[in-house]
Image 1 (tube, one colour):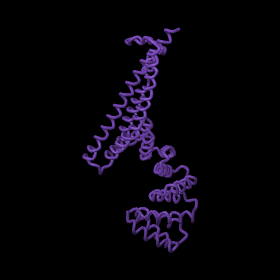
Image 2 (cartoon, one colour):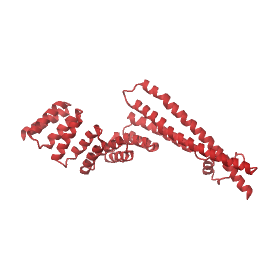
Image 3 (tube, helix red, strand yellow):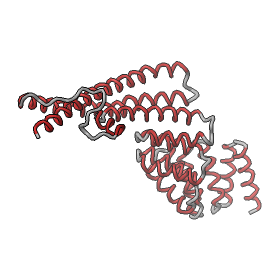
Image 4 (cartoon, helix red, strand yellow):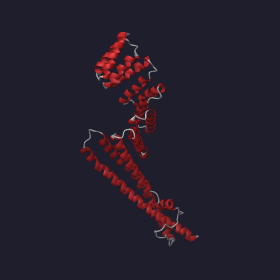
Length: 324
């Protein structure tokens, strides 16, 4: 046993020094001498993972867990290796086994969030990242990934809060800074688009306390329809405008969720990755600008349609008062 302990210590030292191939060989010797050593299998698995041999790493982490089923780190690291292989369902199962044994593991929750995000299960990914932050408020990458998930869900204000919470702990983190700027801008665009779809009288009523249909200072008074024919034409126009409004809003949503999200994601990627040069950022900007112009054009059309609907609604109200 003394010989095995010496081999283990030499193997651990090789890992600390970054000599992963040497460490792998030493841990393999330990396994051959003491095949029931969970420590030797764990080290062999870790060295294999650090050499990017994740298939072998999974096998050795599982062997470690077979020998010592209550070793949470074996299950958690098995999950991480499986995730690197793209086997996300298996990764989630392994990580959850690890969490049953070590429910306070921020690392397990963080990697669980990554696995769920890779599967596209964004709500569960967000929950896992939030739990990782609760377990370890200094886990900066959890704030970044939580923000990214919320951004992908279109919850831009919440995304901005997540990025900002991370910046409070890592003020110089450029990825968090870029995410915060993008989320804030997208939130403003979304709120502008939503405001454009609200009938003007709703906003004025809220601001002035006036009753619906009451005349607002500076507006021309609404006059009743002069005939049944004119009223029928107005009803037809209302239907046409409502259909156009629906199409305009749907188009704005498509632009937000498609062109702008895509170009913003490309821009963030270029800004936060050191391998991307200024030329790549500049190349992306025209697509971003074009998407923004499309969105603002749609917003202007929706706003004009809303104004016309507001005017027709006031005339219908005036007509109703006139016929009482």
